[in-house]
Image (cartoon, rainbow, N blue to C red):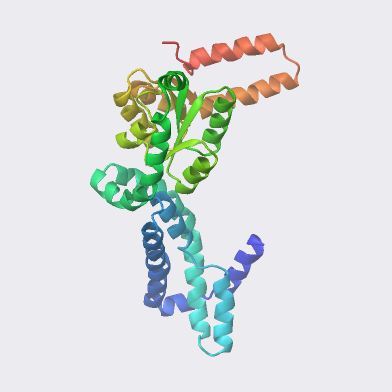
Length: 314
């Protein structure tokens, strides 16, 4: 379908319409790439969703969809639109669809840029934070509403998990199987509500903020798992958590080997590096396939872990 769609759009494209009316095309692009997504962003933001959710929805709408061509054909039949107008619509569709993936790639850098400006970031996240205040208060009360014996037992086995994507979900499930109390921090309010409804402890908010980590009981926790993909967020979470609990054991996800040095510098206890673990995992699978001695495979894997500094022993 995708191939047929784009081939069909290309066949409809008339470059002369663009040459003859460039200003009109610029206006269409401004409406599609600026006005429409900005309107969507404001609506989603006013509904108290997170900045990331608002940006994702806004950019998803920053393009001309295939349904527009059906409307254009009907408008031509009703003599509400000329063929030149449809050609401009097609040109706008081609450009907006082409630019859309690039706009999506810009969400993460934009968020990092805004996080470096606390005032602006607070303003953008203030409404979404309000939506989770009551829920966070309830979750925090559940954390502290136990007798002293239960508190001591929970603190000895409490792990705060930052991020509830596929990595965080798997980690939380396995830790619960081993009777380790988990407290999830996530920026998706719906996710936090679902966890709360299921009887799990979850806090809504930005884990780089002290008040959010404190609401999750980081001061009394023994472990912290940072599973979010953004390296800046991971680093800030580790720094903030270390300030609140110097004795905390911090386990951090990393994508590349080059991230190890600064994550260790800011206080990571153990780092799971996707780049290295994938290489080792694929190699182990192949060695098992060819019938290699399992003890030798384990020894080789352990040696590589030590050589690459994947697991710290201090």
